Image 1 (cartoon, one colour):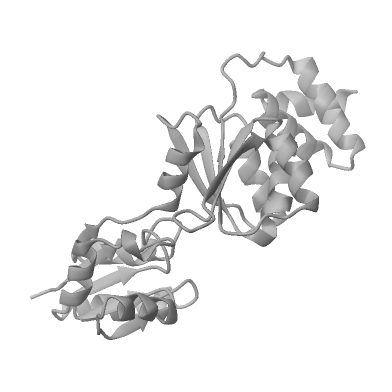
Image 2: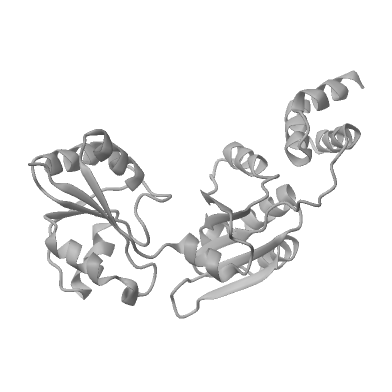
Amino acid sequence: MSGKLYIVGTPIGNLGDFSPRAVETLNDCDFIAAEDTRVTLKLLNHFEIKKPMISYFEHNRREKGEIIAERILAGENCALVTDAGMPAVSDPGEDLVALCHEKGIDVKVVPGPSAFVAAAALSGLPVGRFTFEGFLSVNKQSRREHLLSVSHEKRTMIFYEAPHKLSATLKDLFETLGDRRIAIVREITKIHEEAIRTTLKEAAEKYSETPLKGEFVLVIEGESEEKAEATLEDAVTLAREYIKEGLSASFAAKKAAAETGLKKGDIYNLIKEA
């Protein structure tokens, strides 16, 4: 008889947030699939849990995913954990969960702390509707395309970011989205937990010279519904400014289209005619 996969949320900073059901699940499972076994071992030791572990992370997920699934199909129960928060959310555990579903394995969830949900609650920004965008790519082209794709998003947006990339990200966000309200939420559930409510312009300027420490979630307000609609002439003018900055006509038209909501082809044709 096949076993089960349990998705178990782990603390994002405060061990007191680990639920009794999560402790029970780890005690009852046959083995644990962990992002970093060293990090998980500290959690297990704190709660006096002794279970065998198998590493499962970004660079071994395909090979280890099949091994884990086969063990579950053979009758073992597996608990999937990440270093902090909910597995499978902006996390390679997503692939293991999908693989188990494909193989007909019963998947259960043991909810736990989630950084982006906690940040949304702390932000003070409208979060009746929001979009979780995860981490921005380190690849410049992918990063630019991601930001352009959300430049007219009306819902509040939530991003994860590492401390060493915060300054560059705030600068990119301001340049692409314009000046909007932002809550920089850091060190959630830890002693220095803080929600810094400011604007993208102020944050980009201030933290370029005075870097913040900690783990960050960025909560940014969506585009205002009252924002005036741009004309095609406005878009062409904007695209020409980007060309002066060194962008190609095609990319300048694409960027202007993303910022104005108008069609790239219409902007590009007018640029070429001039």
